[in-house]
Every structure is written in C-alpha cells, then in structure tokens.
Amino acid sequence: MFSAGVERAIHVSIAAHAGQTRKGAVDTPYVVHPIHVALLLARHGADEETVQAGLLHDVVEDCAGWSVARVAEEFSPRVAAIVGDLTEDKSKSWEERKRWAVEHVAHMSPEAAAVKAADKLHNLSSLLADLRAAPDHAQVWSKFKGGRERTLQMSGELVDALCARLDSPLTRELRATMQALRTAAG
Figure 1 (tube, helix red, strand yellow):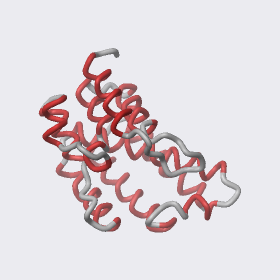
Figure 2 (cartoon, rainbow, N blue to C red):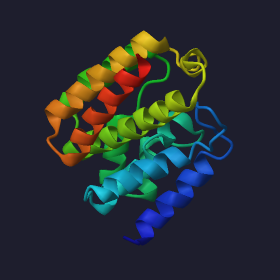
Figure 3 (cartoon, one colour):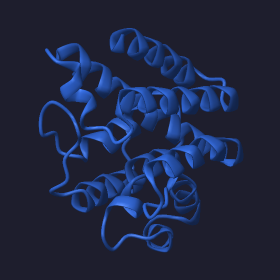
C-alpha cells in the first residue's frame, strides 16, 4: 500500500516524535506506536487517509509545532478531522482525559473510532507483553498515572465503548486483548 501521502505521514511522524520514548520495559522510540497503529489499520482495510491519521494521531497533543490546522494544510481536511477527533486536551487531568475519551467515542466518525481502536489495541498489546516479561508487575504499573486498577477500569470502559461503536475484526481483537490483559494482571 505505497502512496506518497502515507510515505509523507511516516516521515512527519518520525520527525515529530524524534527523541520521545514509550513507557515500557525498554526505551522504545515513540514512533513505533503510530507505525503499529497504521499497520493495524492497513491490515484491517482502512483507506489511505485513515492510515495517515493513524500515523499522525498523537502529533497535535504530543509534538511541538503541530496543530489540527497544520495537519489539514500538510495532509487534508479529512486527515485533520480524524486527528482532531482523537486529540486529548493535555491541560486536563488524567482522569478527565480518560473519561472524555470514553464518552467521546459515541460522537466520533467511524474512521476516528477505528484509529482509536487500533491505538488502544497497540497500547494494550504492549502493556500485556511488558507484564508477561516482567518479574515484578508493580514495576510495570508504576509507569501509569492511573495505576493498575484505574488503568484497567478506564481501558475496559474505552474498549466497551469502541466495541459498541464498531463491529469489526479490529474491535474483536481489541476485546480479546483486553481480556488477556485482565487475566495477566491477575
């Protein structure tokens, strides 16, 4: 699925997230996450602009110099609308942002909901892998603002909202991953 737009979104994501790392057992470059999101979307048949939005879904909230308007200028209004639909207000508390994310699913475009599902699937899959590899689960959970209980609760609520919104192999995979995470977390 080569296209100039996806290629440009890959380059922008790499540059915008340069120097950022993921929370996890190892210092993984952050850009690995949006690339995984885009791969999940492509695997599940998303169109090119939705894949671009997957690559760019965190640039507005996490990268200096990026706004929804800039995404619209450099990509398209549709890509910008999807990214804007996913962008959290970082001035809010963790609890407020996670509650908004759950409640906002019902109002998202189907494309934004698909990107959010792929985003959550990769995040949960990464967390599950870290828990399975960790000799001490407390070390893994210490990196999460919500801790074990609130992270599992809010993740479960978001998964339920996404699965109610979309009926697709992507959300079925998301539900199975959430169940595996609950089992691994004990």
